[in-house]
Image (tube, rainbow, N blue to C red; front, top):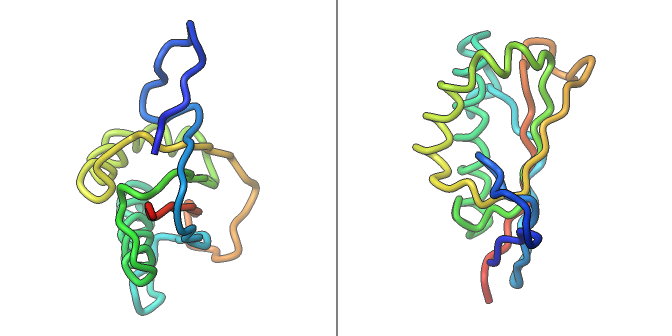
Amino acid sequence: MQVLLPDGWPRPRGYANGISAQGRLVFVAGMIGWDAQGQFQTDDFGAQAHQALENVVAVLDAGGALPQHIVRMTWYVLDKREYQAALPAIGKAFRTLIGHYDIAMTAVQVSALIEDRARLEIEVTAVVPD
């Protein structure tokens, strides 16, 4: 995996502008903050982010991939202010579960998610090296 940073651009904080990778692709559908039984344990944004990232890691594992194989991540959030307020908790969960920030990331505020109690949804693409 190679981080793509155009000449003269500052290194972004908390993500990569682009990634180049070769290998077997693993796609993780949008994961939300419910547990393995499909039950929400909390409505707290940071806690739901932690659970959603745990769910991402579980699906990656089922596909023979690890968090370090993640090359792209998209966050869909209901409220950007709620997301920004939860950044310390999100950062802690991210460091614990994912461990690196060399990921092309996008965050988008949306008007609704399919599950009413979901505060966010995270979609991932991973590349397992050949």
